Length: 308
Image 1 (cartoon, rainbow, N blue to C red):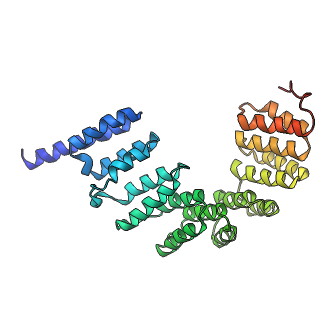
Image 2: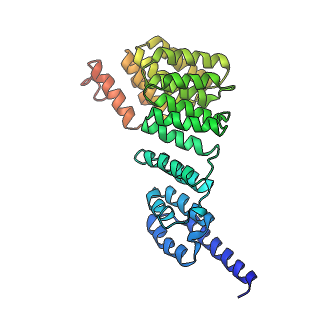
Image 3: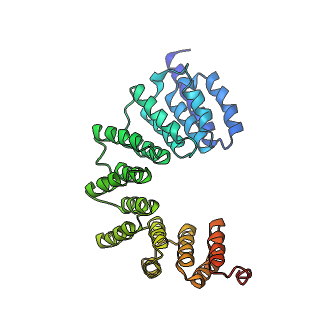
């Protein structure tokens, strides 16, 4: 077989594997493709390895791919930034695997693979889930060293990370205040950080500053603002927030509707909470729990049994 034929056959095998992985929709099928990859010698093909990893992640089976791709026998020379980003992202998206996302980030550095601006939002998201402030600070140090601190996506995840870690809210505000331009995600991350920590006055105050800045909030931001209103028992502020949502036509997601119901129920206007509940097209368990708890709190448990 001449060199041209050999290259052609390798490319055909590669394309065949990539097509199989693209159409793979179950773990059982993936386990059938796995030996096929090895048989064709494509376990040393970076493109196939990355696709195998991303497919595993889509099937909620990232651990299966990791045990194969990052086995002790694997050739680390095959690893690249995109492969690690895919692996870190998949682990960061799972609450039970966030610590492994950080471990793969450390492995990435040990292998001499350079992170890029897409790596750090995934790593910082994992740090936020773990809630380890010192770990987050260490990653932040790497961000500064590699000069990715000017990227708005990295900045936003830094704000979120610090706002999610105990003792980190001061650092979150410092990063936020130093941002040359804040988008809706930036404001939402900072307001959400305040709301989660029960710093409700600060959350509402920052929301007012967001309005002045001219940045349009989304439903995620408004959920945090309503949570702050609920915590303060500030019914009048909550009513103003509801009118703002209507005026600005903020997307009324299920989560936002639930937050409105919870706020009105806990702040004393159970009739308004019931009205909002009845008008909801889609309800989930939180919707029901919020309105039932509200009825019980206001002594209308039995009278409200037929409220739907």
